[in-house]
Length: 188
Image (cartoon, rainbow, N blue to C red; front, top):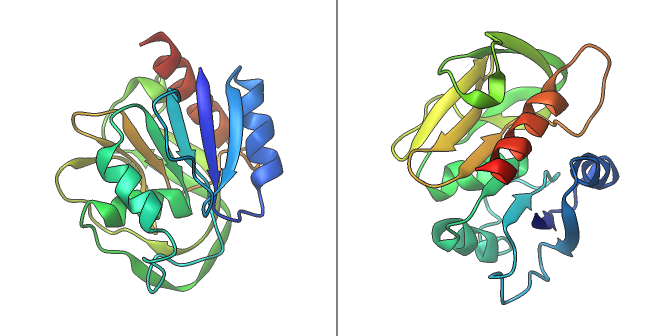
């Protein structure tokens, strides 16, 4: 599956690259400010995390906002990518009192094949913003104490992960859930 990883200056790009290639993806990496004009050859686009905030940086990330609105193939946002997608579809991002970093439990709020039989699972968090509630066309799939953790678009294959599936910490299942999604996208 030909995949474009848009690197938003994530400190986890190396780990993300390893996760994606271990899932058999044919990977090309582009900086957020050097996104190719022609995206038709890509079957999947992934928006990485970032230390930036969506608020006050719309101009810097305008190309990604435009891509989110127009790309009709599979698209996955991770952490900051999750926030970009949520914001692009009109959802409110809330600044948290302090940065959330470490293991967090996610409860499945809507069954989806990416979870298998799991009703909850642990993930690695590293973010300062949260989404308390999603509006149409995004559907909440899982939530933690801090807010929405996983969503999908109701009609096109767009997914968002507020957590970092690429950060392998003992006892968390974020990478497994992400790999399940990649498998479903490849086969479906």
